[in-house]
Length: 308
Ligand code: CP
Image 1 (cartoon, helix red, strand yellow):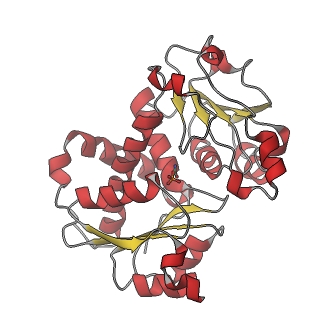
Image 2 (image 1 turned 90 degrees about the vertical axis):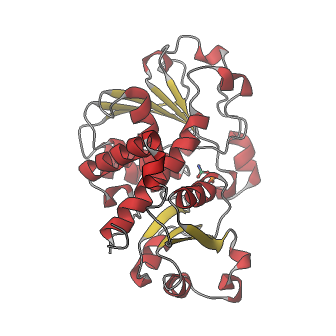
């Protein structure tokens, strides 16, 4: 059974096939309208979500399938003490594929050991968010036509921001990618990401506490919010919450074809005046999330032999 728990669960060539399937879905939506007829997706969300859960649900509905699930732990029997493993064992009898978000790192992997159907990690604690990464790769590919030869600025909370961890892991597989890691020192990329991914290959990177100097070199600026829910104290959060706010003034000197991305939700790290700048692609990014999740559902159900 193939699950999708980490970006490494699909090889670079499988990821490329997924991106190409996503491109075909964008162009030929009708072709896929019934491909998941009579199949069910279960969305088990133990943590809040707008984009990930609803884009998964929209994806399955647009593929002709249906959706069951819950959007908070309190509305499931987890509140009575049921384990994640038992929950998933039960739900895998009701659904053909499961998307799970959980606050505990590794919970979707534990769930996958008990599941009879593919499990997708829809975000686990501060660890990883691989379908956001597929969304990001798809967006970069649609904007730039390639995933090679890019200088990418990651800006904000790079310690707790699981989307940036997954994106680094994924982009390290492409040629001539350079990362500018822009964050307060206390919110820098964890050491394991540096040793296991950035230092392990040929990817170049440098750390900055402000984006100004590197801004003119960036092809992609990937903004992230400061992850309030993962701080141990409110004072620590307040100290960093306005570490960097992108506005039009700060974009002076940036490339004309810069792509500005953000996994959303935004708090105040991008001023709303930036939304109308043609370089702002974060709302297109959310729509791309639906298309690439459609491609992922089709791919995993095909691998499981559930659909043709
Ligand atoms: N980008 C993202 O994961 O958003 P949600 O938390 O709303 O799902």
